[in-house]
Length: 163
Image 1 (tube, one colour):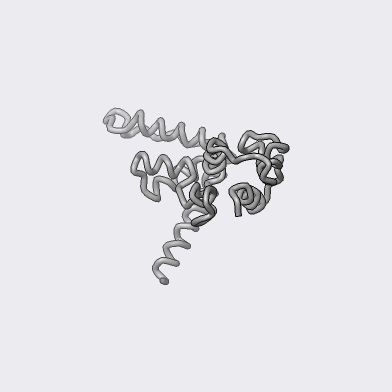
Image 2 (cartoon, one colour; image 1 turned 60 degrees about the vertical axis):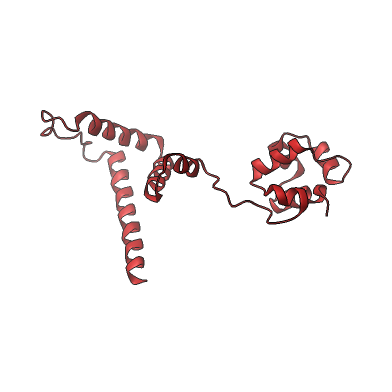
């Protein structure tokens, strides 16, 4: 099997059309057709782009040896974890924060800013933190989210103790 055949096999494994695959690696559909049919060479530059874009094992692409895909960390959170020595809880916190709708992140940031501004200050130790008005839809959603997180934690705790 040639490298050209492996490019086609990869595209098919990803369930992408030639147009979709080509746009991801910045080549026209006609150019990709020529690669897949062996009429064009797969340049080193295209090989590197394919490997980076689709997490493809470069050795597999070049020679057919090994697995098609790499097992490398691929998310930005994984990259941050490696760079800053984050543990699984740190990664989960970041991931959940990023999944929150913008308005909930804003509420959380405001609360965290209040904590930062008031930490260690004896004058503000007795100051209550800002509490949203009863019936506030954001507060209700945050409470619901908190309950989901607690239930999830209890579920994973009970599954750990059962095992």
